[in-house]
Length: 310
Image (cartoon, rainbow, N blue to C red; front, side):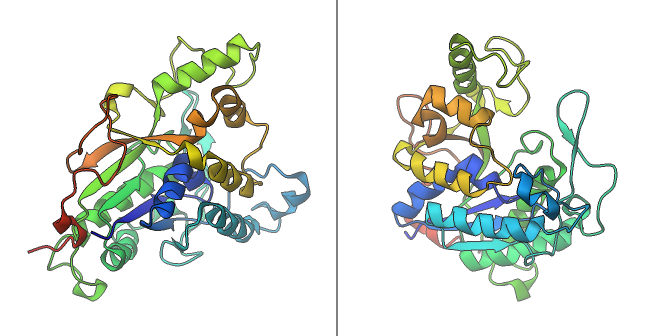
């Protein structure tokens, strides 16, 4: 069976943060890895002072710049098949603001092309075409909350979920290719236990400012998932360096002295090299001593390679 993995993300950099090590591992194993990014990340915060002129309210060139950052990140991970949903510029970053409760919500004003406002069927059809072309056995995207509530993450979840369902319908949009049923769908996740351990190490080292307001034994944001909900842990520590290089490529968005790098410095390659997932469709395959799959393709038989629908 020729293994194929499809990942659906909202903005450039989301893929490297969430599944950089997983992508690098599967590329090294000969798996066909396809990344679909839904927007250009035009509304992202610019962390490089000399590039502030690219901001949306000035030259509005951040999306094109991040296009180059993403290309460099993919080179670091070895991924050669990367696409923008509907083509680059079809959908625009919706922006966001923080709700008083600590999660992201939509910005007060959005562009006409904002992904959060996209017609769901239209956006899903773009992805149906990719699914039917690539014919992946495994699809990875966000949970229904988009991890932390970002409207584009939530929309990416909706589009990926709807597209996977539509792609499997034999009579639906025959012009988009033969029907294909994705055998397994996973939602990306961050282990609550692992994050608490990292926070504990930070506080023990005297760092009281990184993730200020979050304590090892206190309440954590919804983006950190209780371990009993996890079904897979991809151990790819040998690819942590590739993931780090991919993260560095997204220099307008990720500071190497930022909180996640601080967390990784205390936890070593385990933070960057182990990535967690929740299964949303299909059945988990064989698990290890930790009760989790270490292969997103685990349990798939030889017939799963076609995804043909009777």
